[in-house]
Length: 82
Image 1 (cartoon, rainbow, N blue to C red):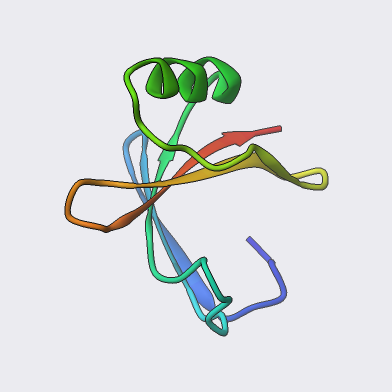
Image 2 (cartoon, helix red, strand yellow):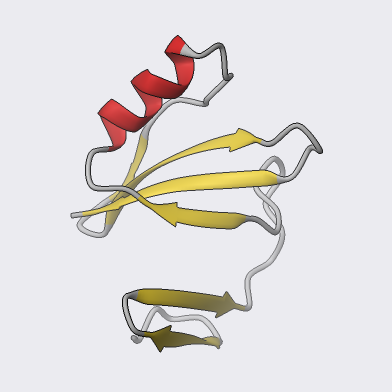
């Protein structure tokens, strides 16, 4: 889709791989994103298990997202499309 940045999306069945060219933003670097149907429920469930998850934030008209780190320090995005 046209996002105003370079890159491409690859869809294989229900899975998508998004490769985008963006400048690094402090605190949000390269990461793996997981699509969720209900971000509030997903964040709540993770927090109940003791996982530190950042606040849910919107990208207006596109999605809701929240970030966390796995035990190795890799950043993970939870993403709910609007």
